[in-house]
Length: 128
Image (cartoon, rainbow, N blue to C red; front, side):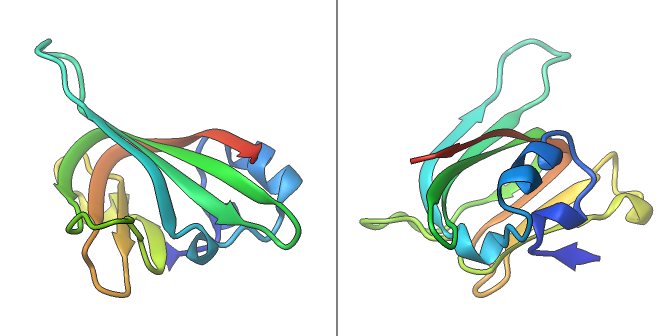
């Protein structure tokens, strides 16, 4: 099931985020603050994508950092003065048995962003 509620995902780091923002909705994390794709030459090293987003909570703004590990497919929107991921949703697609892909993140509004990866985790969530 595709979701925009972080609490619905079984990934490392979610508990700490939910403790601060129980109803964290990825629709409110649409502004990209940073984007880093890394692939090393080592054969056993999996490509990673670090996605840093601005989350606008009810009373506080946070920086939310998601790490996608073992990236198999990546589509990025055209870059302009700002980079937005409208209606970001994440789905555990492990039941589809697609060559080790477990998670798919997609900007549902225009499908301009897609990241399919073997694993993912929350690596940061801090007030701005």
